Length: 332
Picture 1 (cartoon, rainbow, N blue to C red):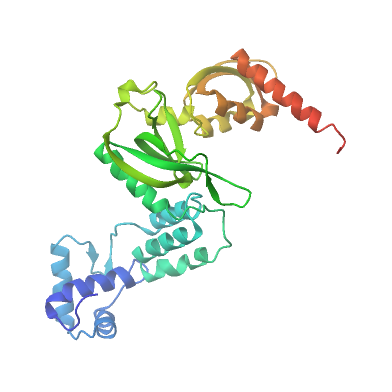
Picture 2 (cartoon, one colour):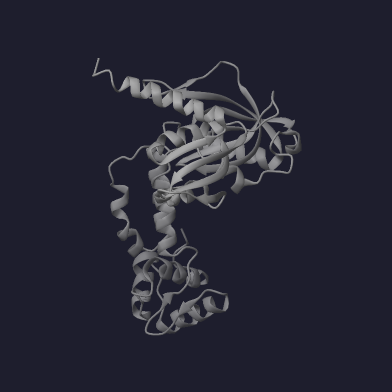
């Protein structure tokens, strides 16, 4: 907090008041600023000092309106941007409930008191689904540092048990070459390479514990299958919708024209409409991770028929047959 009673700090104190108490709908008079200086900082000044210091702040580059009262025209984040950031935190499933609330409070503090009042209800929402890994912030920071220094990392990779707690998948630590972190479907993922192999692998950050940055340099991306030309992130994300590891295959399928919007939601414009057929069906071609697309097809089963690759078509047919048998057992 600023020292009180120090006239040299007057312009900074006035700036803080404008940040906290002013916007286009809440313009401050000189007298209101004088009152807030006294009540908040025990600072006494006159109207001329207020005006002179506001002019000084404008000369320093701060956009302050002086028409019909004073208010700060431009902030680092406007209310809509802050609300978008808060919502992103609120629905981030990789954060714990406590981490989410702490971040939301920090974001609220960036806005003025009027913005804070508008979003107070958010912090009191019923608990949404969040993660359980309290090391998440440390994990993220360590991996970020390793990527920037081009160093390998080691970590324990976990899975959730029926007790809703993380349990190691194996005793041996994973050694991974980290290349990029991405957010997808509410979770944070690491795109990297498991050091023993030469292909791309993905790891959820909320399932990682005991992360350490190693001294050894990362494997060059051109030595990793699929990264010979570097990481094309938009293409990679479109082909790995559920972040399964493994390569992509070319898929030909018939889809109902009514779900073209869903295709755009999942794959952007990285698919091709080959031709239209009768009964509102469209022949579509795209590339995607085969295991991920298997699950995607089950999700949109009534509207999709995979034609190729034949191996995927057979796998889907077997899964549908098994489900049909399961749901026709009359509850046995």
